[in-house]
Image 1: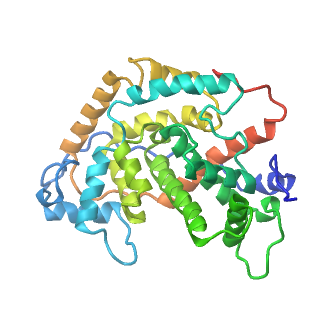
Image 2: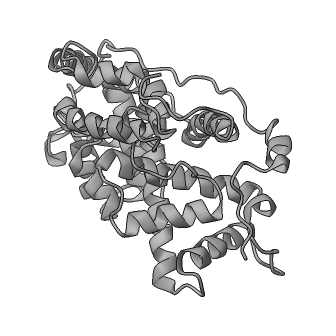
Length: 354
């Protein structure tokens, strides 16, 4: 019989206490910058790349990108980033989220995770369950599918830090930590020796989840609620690269400060939703047309961002330490998840409104 943790191991609690730090918030860029001398005009983020002056493209690349395998992003890929930056979130998120909210309430009223996910999210067996649910399209809605991928990443990375706390068998000689954890997850998925395609499927879900974490960490966790179908399709179909995702997140951070502020304001609500709970602030955001996801608020957001785009120039931008920011956000969410996981056996059933 395989060993399976149903709560966070004591060793993880002891060792993890000093690892998770309280992060500093990522400062949102100023909403409007005065164009400097020699500015060649604004960048319209829906504009085809060939219509944007080469100087601005070059400066944007240097400001927003890091080389991938020694090469800058190709022109066609950079044009894709500009297009997706303009379509990062759904233009009318309430029309998508309001019907889902009813089903989330129904799940919680039955003592289930709001998103229809397993309440047990950590450990080898939980990772296998999440991967199987994604493979078999058992996660009912797009928000839950994104949350499942993001939770799978947190689980996998946590297990790679402390594999001896979670893996059901001893580590083999010369077996690296990541391979050790992946082998255990893949074995649990098929109850036997997994094929290469089965391993690749898990790797794909992890890659998609990491990309979601990159964008959500930089532009705000509310992205997990409001991601556009076009961008999610690019992520699932791997029609974008690691460098493209990094560029997209950084470009959106600098170019769309009002959107970034809105998405960051939803962090607490989304964190609770990933825990399986529905916060009052989430209900208000979705149900109230005068709330932060209402058409009036989104119209103001787009107007502010357009003013910013019309005023900014492609000069120097302070670089973002992507890895540090992403890890800080993950640590913050992971700390909340682990705390809740430890309290599950003592808490009453999940409430609909918190």
